[in-house]
Image (cartoon, rainbow, N blue to C red):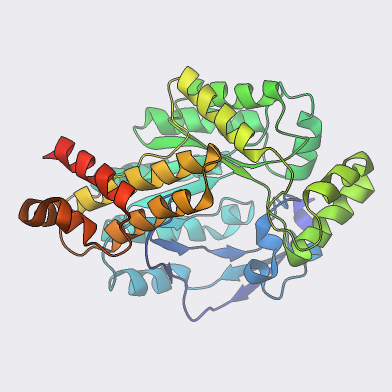
Length: 373
């Protein structure tokens, strides 16, 4: 089936995406990818959306692969002008065996000492374990795996069908074990947890348990999102293959929706948290500390605030309360001065003077700093 793919070489003007601040899932400040389209062809992939697939028809997403020429050179020219921070990169679809662009980009990261966040649905990542070790030795990095189901799930066959050509789950867990044994932070992105397919009790626990047993230290849980052409594509797939799921999905994803509505996502996220506690891992990814970072304490405080925002969100607290902590995390992230100096000079008043620092988050920051100083 993979032989059906057509590879179209093209030369983008740029390859690096720079973000104002790191995201609160992977803690990456930058992103760069070697290909557009993916031979794995997961039916639920958000990359089929217009803003990601651009001119690629969602039907052709897994058969028309754009190969970015000179990607490593473009990445090097961009990174030498940037402060060191985490780069989200890599793509281990079958095309990588032939073109090797991910490996070339990792060589640039090793050369410039940029830490990486890698997310893979394939054990092919082990081919580059030597580079990942070197990069991790210079700046702590992360290699995570996309896994949504295990054979313990009564709906595993459906989940595997939706993952299309992605390698078997067992090979991904085995690769995770090798990554963990190499001393690299690893875990899984349990994304998306497909309603009615991957959210049964047996599967939730089996995924978390297998992660812990194979050296994973976190499970990041996320729901399915559907937009524009991707939504139409996914519903067409369900109608052709699993028509019994269609009525429920049309209820969960009515016209105009992006996230699921009238679906107990909070309950699923809280269950994942309970299971992670049971097996001694986390439902949030620890933020890697970049050596020599003068604002490392700020980033640690921002991490704690972001974690608090997530906790409030999954517990169903009022939205304005969640956003108070999210905005406070961004405010500390944007601070160009070590927050300890602000606190030492002005105390609580200094913390409260930070733009977008609400009263309750400010009190929490004071407690955090008291424990660090």
